[in-house]
Length: 221
Image (cartoon, rainbow, N blue to C red):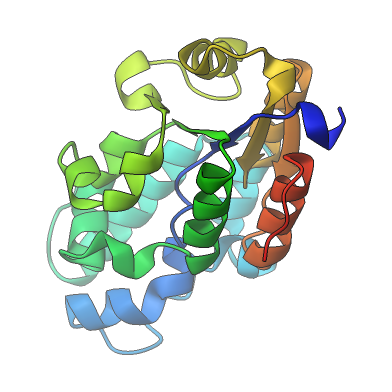
């Protein structure tokens, strides 16, 4: 697809718009009163030292299952019994969600919006992980034309219906959408449905956003 035919930017949330929990271990440790260096699992930043992440990448467990396991593990470190990811996120990230939003995401969203491109979020667990009130505490989300969240639809990426739902919400053909996600399985699902894609590299967020904006005919400046 040529850049000139793309008119919408569709973003995953966790890892793409927000920093991953791997990147904010120091803040999590401080918030929970844990000693620096307590949290050693690093996911994509050191996959060889995180066997649970590797198992998830092989399809042996879901992303939700991975984070539920980590949530329980961290809760136990402070003597609490956590049964959901939302508790982990709220306790680790505090009251100001903007502190963990990628500055590159803010910039790319602004560029796309000012250029008249449509914006959407396609997430498997936005409200599940962050809580139903999160959207009201994050002004950045006001820029989006559509938010499709499997917390409510029950349809998880890479199910083709998930991509169909966000295209329907935007009233656009799949070929008009650039989809950005940090999970390979979700990228493969989007490609199969006809969307242009960028496999987001959490280690190099600016390069990934630059590529996405290029597909929209825009510069990341």
